[in-house]
Amino acid sequence: MTIPMDTGLSDTRPTRILAIETSCDETAAAVIDNGRYIRSNVIASQIELHQQYGGVFPEMASRAHIEAIATVIQRATHDAGATWESIDAVGVTKGPGLPGSLVVGVNAAKGICLARDLPLIGVNHLEGHIYSHWLEDAPITRLGEQPFPLLALIVSGGHTELVVVRDHGQYELIGNTVDDAAGEAFDKVARMLGLGYPGGPAIETAARSGNPTRFKLSRPRMDKPYNFSFSGAKTAVLYALRKFGGAADATHGVSPRVPVADIAASFQESVVDWLAEKTVRAAEAYDVKGIVVGGGVSANQALRERLTAIAGARSARSFTVLFPPLALCTDNAAMIGAAAHYAYLRGARDQLDMDVLPDLKIG
Ligand code: KG4
Ligand code: ZN
Image (cartoon, rainbow, N blue to C red):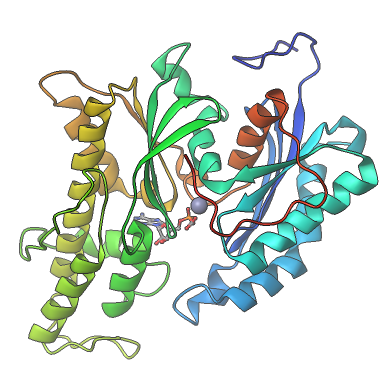
């Protein structure tokens, strides 16, 4: 077997990582060879469980992880045809995330490392989203042999971060949300409009038949140039709802007079345009080689189109924008395996007393 890009290995046996991810509401395990090849990628979603509450219920998430974790890991090794002897290290998300969810994955990883005398590698979940671009057909190679510096936009249910990636494992956080995360805003607005959970896909679908210019959502001025704030957009949606006699929390559905599609489209337009505009401005300021996007919101088609259009239409220079395949946008263990692989090559190792880091930052 030949060794693919950038592994730094001289022998011919691939480095094999068993990766585990339980930071939020997906119980996931994967077997990844050389930080790139997905031998298995198992995800047990808790969406149905949380749908009845309109969001993730931490205590229930933790318990659902406990029930699923062993089966998910067994299935990942089985699907990959991987023996325990073939695994070189175990990578696991150590944070950020829900504490009660993170501990389930971390303890499972520790148990395996203890029993098999394997190295433990704690991975930052945000780093995982960035490394989704190194998987399979490795879209990152479109930026050339050396893709750094790179700009990463991470947009998910818990995060809205702009990160300059200077090299493998070297990050500089340049922008963040000061209140809600982008995906969280999608989820809250969807709930207000009676569109269900998760909100992102529901808003995207509703927005297709709506008029994105009907409502103007103002954008607050930020102290730092690459920061975001989404609570104002949420409040604007609330006022629009009130104007049409809709309920603030629409568990019983909104009034038929509420123009749900127009509100959804206007909200999405506002969020997507702001994300795209700031991201491209940051790419120019930091003179990066390209832009990678990750996290659940990167599945949004309107964001994909707008960001690609703005990044390609700058007068000074254009930027290549990469999005992961849809299945790798939302939480998965394959991306944790890719990140763990490069950490493994750098010699990163964690001890068996490693704690979870629910508020872990990047950069
Ligand atoms: O990355 P992810 O699976 O979990 C976190 O780490 O948070 O992201 C989930 C988030 C949810 O808020 C969901 O509403 C949002 O991603 N999302 C979307 C879309 N698909 C998922 N937001 C906008 N448009 C979508 N198509
Ligand atoms: Zn995530």
